[in-house]
Amino acid sequence: MAMRVVRTIADLRALLRTLREKGQRIGFVPTMGFLHEGHGALIRQSAARCDATVVSIFVNPNQFGPGEDLASYPRDLERDQSLCLETGASVLFIPEDAEIYPTGFQTHVEPGQLAEPLCGRFRPGHFRGVATVVAKLFSIVQPDLAFFGQKDYQQAIVIRRMVRDLNMPVDVVVVPTVREADGLALSSRNTYLDEKGRKRALSINHGLQAAREAFEGGERSAARLLEIVQGPLSHSKSGVTRVQYLELVDAQTLEPVQGTVDRTVALCVAAYVGSTRLIDNVILAPAADEAGLNVSLSPQRV
Ligand code: AMP
Image (cartoon, rainbow, N blue to C red; front, side, top):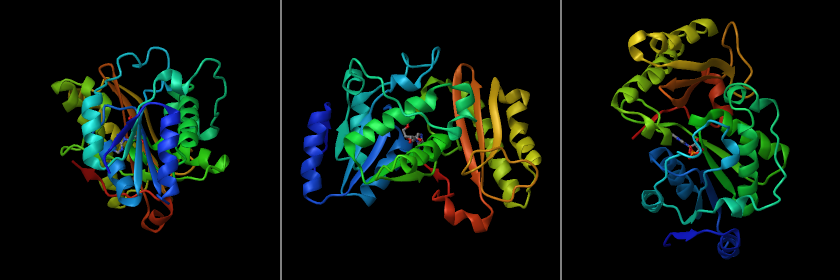
């Protein structure tokens, strides 16, 4: 099927109705555009598991705080269209702001405790904005499956909770983080980094990988694992300007884990390289725990 580009909710609904009438299973990948192979992995998984895949591109103003990069968020619709086509998308939904937030809009989804720690602490209102737009998009697309990246781990957990709490009939699939060959997590915001900044950003992954190796070698002290990540980050030559947070949390509840790590945890970092804010994480699972998480732990490389 050729890929269709749709800009209004009415057109999208009409198109999806015909697909559903044919009994097609709909997959959905919400994005903010400036797509890369991380998004590509989500689209490919959806295309493999569903009959039709809807990708949305919408830079959601409601999830950016004052002073964040809403105005400068990178855009390249032409390249995005090619990537969607190559990776197997069937429908590309590119709404205008007013299509999603018409005059008078005033109803929001307020996530609970899962939205408070980590990014939530430094980006007040961010997950409220994310949950609201994703709820709206789910209501518009009505997908059977929706695909989210592990790179934004807290986001995936908040959305999964929302789906359960509000009885939304969609399965949330979390796809492992796609990385450059040298380990840097792909992100649309990497485009803000110059060559030097890119090298500096690598220390985030170096720290996380060192902690993963230590964990695999049997290290179970939460404090020690955090120190191991901190090492490359605080090394003067790494040049990471400021670590915003570095936390070891329960992978399901996102509550801090102290003492001995005896369950699946997420080791999460947010750091500024210059003025660019980057996030990354690894999931550390005692072998017996892996199955329950629905997050494949094998890293992917492009
Ligand atoms: P964004 O366009 O940044 O809002 O991201 C859209 C979706 O792509 C989210 O579910 C992200 O978690 C996911 N994503 C972004 N970067 C990556 C990556 N490197 N690997 C896997 N998924 C990603």
